[in-house]
Length: 242
Image (cartoon, rainbow, N blue to C red):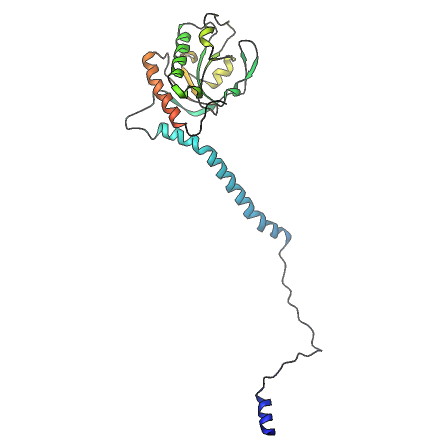
């Protein structure tokens, strides 16, 4: 029996006991520097912030880019615009215009609507009268979209406006703007004067289209098609009113 007990004892697992007098060992790892930690955290956050900002800008610009792409690129073969595209586009100048009553009106206040613009002296000779008539007719021809477009007469001198014209201009925006400011913003085709054209400005305040000089009824019919295409192309992002 004693032999059996010895056999059991020899086969039992041995328990290891640490030496109570041995020193306790610790492993110390080097900690990263504070500036390294900051760089590791700030780097991804900065990149993420920039990506988010670019995404927001892309979303805001996409409808406008799409409308111009639709108007100038995605068109039936052989079809081209009647008006001349302005490149680069020119933004409404930050100048103070005046109403006929003398009230100061910042020109950028016109943003938020499509603008069909003519420029002429307050005396308004025959070409001016023709342009004002065509502006009204072109706007009316847009039907339900006419409320998305304002017709604007920019008077470039101090000549009084003939009272006989005013009843027909009740829906027009008439502002006096210094001729120097207009000349720095709008420009005519070679060989023409600034008063010879009608100009189109988009709702963000960019002059983007110029119709041929001294527009007549036949030309107005072609200009109408341009305006209709612009209204269709911008319908997804532009609404009536400012």
